[in-house]
Length: 78
Image 1 (spheres, rainbow, N blue to C red):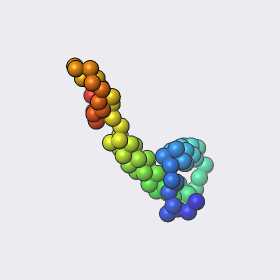
Image 2: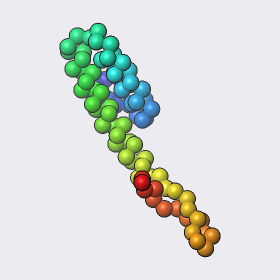
Image 3: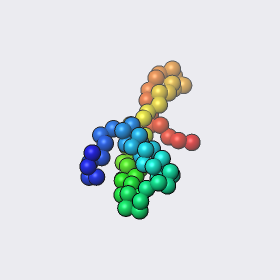
Image 4: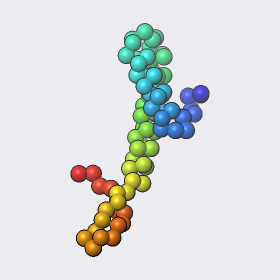
């Protein structure tokens, strides 16, 4: 996977981000690799946040009104 190409799925992005974090936490990399991993990690983090926000906008909750009818409405965090 090239530096410019990001994974297609949230799960792939998160998995790669976790691998980068483990590598960086190990401390066994040279400076250039650490910088490249940091930049890639920031891009993956932004992509994951974007996809989570998009998913959040799509989530609806099912509610039952006082008259017994079932409907959906946007999910709002408390």
